[in-house]
Image (cartoon, rainbow, N blue to C red):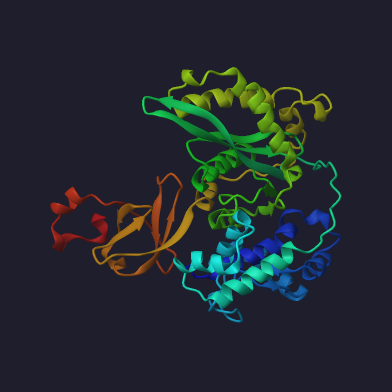
Length: 406
């Protein structure tokens, strides 16, 4: 069962104060924001609906301003005041099953979950009733209005779409396209093609987009598993970017990125022969050429301007991030137990670590392409580690195996 740690609560705090950090101009004063935020309800990492006082929100905000995301992490028992039987993992498991099988009853959900997560039927039934009660409320339709943000990089919309097929002697493979579009300028800030739609590929696209076009204030996304990943939330908090997730079954909320994908399919995909492409890299080159053409073509909604020209109007407002900081902020963070022979496992890869970490639980930071893999000690000192090489180890004199040799 997944344990709730201090970062889950830090992410909740950031999600509450995020709007004031990224769009302070939207509020008449800081205290006005604190008052409005205190009137709202939030879902805690344990799955409970909670409210937070204005003074507490104010304290979180000034802590973040002074210490960043790390300042929101409190080193104390994280299940204080929370029913310990209900974990965030159980809540999300029930929620996902209800989304996929809305007619499934609580008893059947319990039988499905209890085989892999230890929990009671009463816990499942209570979560089931709470979710169903919220779903069954008669919520009036919200007015849907067409909108456009005032400045470039105020909001980027993100989504994934099924792409072309890659043909080989083994058959065909579906490829996936991940893209980001700036709301104000319609600029495609990032667009990449992959063999799968996962968190690693999403991060690769986002990092490239921010490196080239600066960082957005808000990322507007759907509720896909990749977009709601914990790694995405942590990286956004480090960058100082707010995350906004569209309500379920409201494609209008991300109409601009949906329209781009439609244009992409009608023009680029319709004009290429899949059999001409021998690799994903070949597809990426062709896709880059199309995106460049798109960004430099007059857009009907931009009053005779191209997306590039519209973006450049706000060039002075765009905030770029130093490469070293960007590399650091995009490191994934996990915890692992080191084996007795100083081996740690990361996504089935074996890494050799200094002997002093043997049998300890450690923090690992690594880039999504595994070019950088670091082990972090209790003093936040980081050491680069390498893949385990059993052949090299077989000829290493054990008595001389030290940190320096690693």
